[in-house]
Each structure stands twice: as structure tokens, then as C-alpha cells.
Image 1 (tube, rainbow, N blue to C red):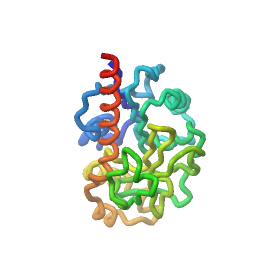
Image 2: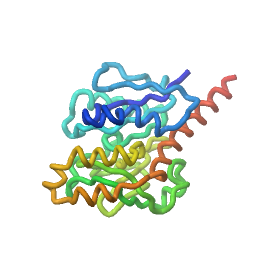
Image 3: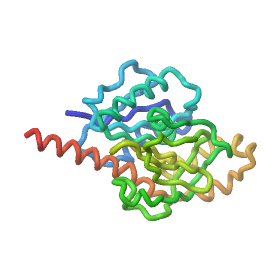
Length: 247
């Protein structure tokens, strides 16, 4: 049976890892219970990535690396993505994965001109999202967890723009029928978001942001989390449909 692959692009801070787990655990929990088997591939450690025909879906995680560093494992994943797009494999890219998807599809990623966005923020759903399978059930504004210094500077030419806010113009997009990128972190819990603020206190303070205010502003983001749950359901439905057709 095909699998939903979580492509893990590194690991979290050591203290956060010990207390709360790692990217793959957060993603698996956020996807919710699925009929589709889930398998984790640490792309920073493996040579071969799954063949598109073996993928029921793909989630590409965030990373502490920067896309513009062009690390060998990152370039390898970026070069793999077009084959997934051609095969219409459902893709869900988160933060780094969102930026990597954009570059692989012809867009541009780089440092955000205004610096880092971090904390629980408000995101605006754009009109095109009203017809989108992952976003159509969300309200026009919803809370989401963020931590990123790089961004999608230019969307792929064929992309459908789905969400933004005053700081980040490209919080979500879709390219093709079934590939999504989200700059925010739907897999984060309140505890994870607070941990990321605390772990980056020195840099946040040096940039002139108020750490206590950011911590006080952290709240539940159940609506943002719905996007990745919707993706998991979509993968299940597609796989079930294919199985039914084959029987």
C-alpha cells in the first residue's frame, strides 16, 4: 500500500526535543488518525527518497536550516519535488517545506526584509481560499503559530494565493491541484510555540521584540491546525478511492 511520507528536515532544539519530541512526532499527531500508513524519512540522513508512485501523500517539515544555504540534502529534496508535482502527489510543505516547494515550482525564497516573524499571529484567508479543499472551512481570519526568518519572496507563476497577514504576504499557497505550502506551523501546540520563543530569547530581544509579550500572546490555534488535518483526510480519501477503483 502507498504511504504518507513525512519528510523530516532536521531536528528541534535539544531541550525541546527532550520535553516535547521532534518534528515527526508533532506532524504525526497533527495529521490525526489516518487509514493511510505513515512513514518518516529523515532527508538529512538518507540518499534515496520515495518514488512518486509509492507516495499517497508527502508532508515536508520545517527546519532550523535556511533554504538559501542550499545544503546538499535540501537541494536533493528540492529536485525531487517536481516529480511529485508531475504525478499529482498531494504535498503539504510547512515553513521550510513551504519555501522549498515554492522554489521547486519556480518561485523564490530568501530572507524576509522585515526580519523574523515569531509567536501566535493573525492570518487572513484570501478570496481564492473559499474554494480550496484545505482552507474553505476556515474563517476569514484565524490564529496561527509562526517562527521564520526566511520567506517566499515570489510565488510560483501558477500558484493560487491563499493566505497572508500584514507581516507575511505569502502565508499559504497552492500549486497545481494538490500541493500546498504554509508559512505558519499548524503542527505546533501552545507548549511548542512557547518553547520556540524561550529558546530564541536572546535573538528576539536583540531584534527589539518583547519576549514576555510574545509569550503572553501565545494561544490555541485549532483553526490553523485544521489545514493539516484536512490534508490528512484528503490523502485518505484519495487512497481509499484508488483502492475502491482497483477492487
